[in-house]
Length: 460
Ligand code: UGA
Image 1 (tube, rainbow, N blue to C red):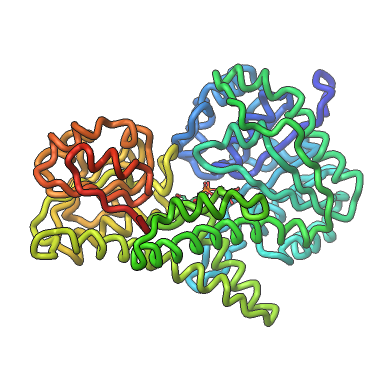
Image 2: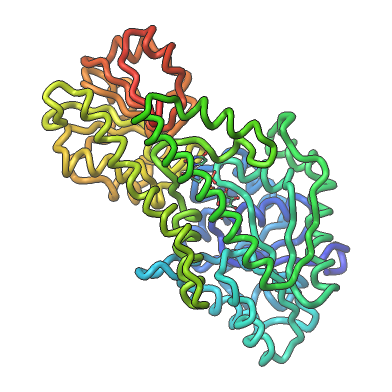
């Protein structure tokens, strides 16, 4: 808290998806916010009022936050922590080769904070960490001069809808032993919730009518909060892999997995969401959290075979879909065929390609199946990093039309609106062949067939 602002001063450590979004929202809710970022490229982007990744509505909020002076980006703990009442740790937790989480950034952020903190600081861990991590961070704080209260405050926002999820959140989970610290964190979210319409206006965002108006605030123990986060992601991954397993059976038995999941999802106990069969899950969270949970289980002597199965199912989907597509090609070979490959991002609405199943498909096609792949994505391929993950023979198409022109087949691997809304007749006109592979089950098979194309979906 400072003299001119009655609200607590906040530092957000780490400017990835969660950190940048949180910092932008807190600053627009009136908090004085420091964004602590050690990566020079990311730091420069925030200072310029923009994010280093594509996310709808985020840049106007960042721009406003920086312009107003309420968001100050720095790479120095000394410039931020001593003035802060609350710290949100949003640093990365990449996975180790054995599937466990690399927690070096978690401990480094805590250790640096411990050096500079003033007494009474509340330290909220938003990064996804294995259960038991908070206990180790608390040991670091135990040795600090200042009294620091630790809470686990897992993040549930999704990339592509980060602003919507952060303003119209359905729940806030805060786990820790100090009730005052828990209250301090809940107060921040309640304040954001009170101002969400005003903040949305700055972002020029209309929330639609599917939003939650009455969020739940859930106070738990520290370990429970940690486990809630990874288990939530693991359960969603499980739903997807379940849908994909049934999709294979539907293919074999002549059923339509979309109809099946609609029927199952109508049961309120199950719900329809995250039962969309397709090329599987990717991104910075599900693959990592599934392997992290398996690894946590092993450390505690618990065999989470159910998650091993979900992961194996997920790994198999790209190959399964390509095999299915191959059966529709004359001569049953991709060799020398031009394939228009639409969608590289791990999901629509983001430029993120981390662990994207689409990349796995492209590379299988180009390298193993010797197809002549022309890939296009509205956002993901602008970055050198993303292009660098593609097999050397893949051609990056500047637009959809040039990818499609004279191709023998089109594969839709990310359900961007641009692909869903593209006229089916134009697909048919531009293509040389007739096969449309819908690896996201995002088109209407009848409409595709009516346009003169052969529809190949997943489990339908
Ligand atoms: C996920 C969770 O949904 C968030 O609640 C969580 O906060 C976040 O991880 C995180 O831990 O930070 P995110 O990875 O952004 O969010 O994306 P999702 O929308 O969950 O999608 C993950 C993957 O599953 C995507 O590749 C998507 O295409 C795939 N998916 C999703 C399916 O294949 N089928 C579905 O029915 C749903």
